[in-house]
Image (cartoon, rainbow over all chains, first blue to last red):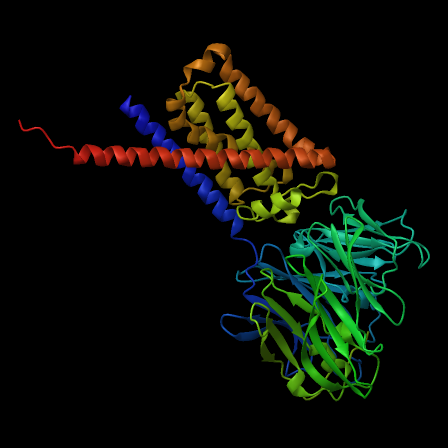
Length: 396
Length: 191
């Protein structure tokens, strides 16, 4: 009897230990917010590459630097005009999308994608996705990464799915779609969302989830309001809450829907059309929105910052990160997009691309800004991004 | 509901969306392997409570194999797809529950239910296990939104069962320690 009791206790202990090992092994793969990916200049070449900032070590290193040439005659490095990177949900790999060809190349429609292992000796994988009609649009929103697959829009109604493990590239056409289908990543790499507007601007827009396996679309809600700007949309992981800007030219109205029903609306002060919004991210608690903005005082200068817009009557809270930078051309707030850490305590935004669009951009303003949102005063850590002597200009 | 479950399961599962079933386009709250584990654990707990199979040597050896099978799959030593991930989880879930149930079964009294099921209890247990191995990945692959809720509910029940078994084990352990202290504190009789 005693022997049997001992056996049972020992086996129960084995079961308990096995379950503990399983659970611990399963959770250790999630990203830990300790590092930030951001675009930065490479001093020797003047090109833009992908850098990693280690928040604990307080140091940066260049991770990926693809180079292209402006002209066969001059051999002036222009580098890809723009690149965008995301961590995979496993926290061990980084995926980067970048322009695949130089200005005079015959392969203008191609897009490069690289899978870079982090912290392990594994090969770097370089992919080339052909026939991307509007490569510039790919970079306006975060990369659509679902698990180990990247979804890239190749044309208005077509999408390509790249399997980062096998390299398999699968094209799909949304034959039944009424209008352009825009893809957005779910937070934490938890799938892909889509917007499907009607043929005409006044028609309804469908928001839903794309099945990463068979490209089937499951609508979550139908939006009757006209979405003003598809780069300023925010949603939660489940796709049940959606916030976006609507309204005409002179007003910015924020509308928040839950399962297609309005749960909150407020007007945002556009300062007489002198303020524009860059990108938006839903706060982790679902009670507000983070958004980047640019605003001018009517002069040839522009200020850039971060704003918290609560879903209540409380006034938005603003933080200006770059004050009165000189501007010449069109507003470029799309080049000033923020990301929020998984724990919701830090916002990160870099001004590298602003420095490419404005010749007179001050070197002191070119930086990676880390905003401690858990601090009452929103403490800002400014990581300088050195400007090269010869700055590349965008070619998109 | 799935949102709340996903929040809870985040504590014990990596929730890699590339390795998560999405019946009807709805992501389950835990990955394919964890879905198998917790759903399997839930079913195993029901079977041990209801059918009470005889926990003989051969029965335990088989479950020992189920437990060991997780190593090559869990550590990715062998290539595997979604179905295999789920199946390895189901077997592991059955094994863990069986081993955790062992000490508790002595106290619960195995005899009562076995009178009803008799020698068929082990057969019935393995038939249900086989059905789980077939139905779980099939439902996850082909099912719709309703299947998503059913699978999530089953996984949640399995997680609750594992927590209850864990609490039971710890309670038994504490009782054992208490008894040991009492025995040590008892004055020894002089010869």
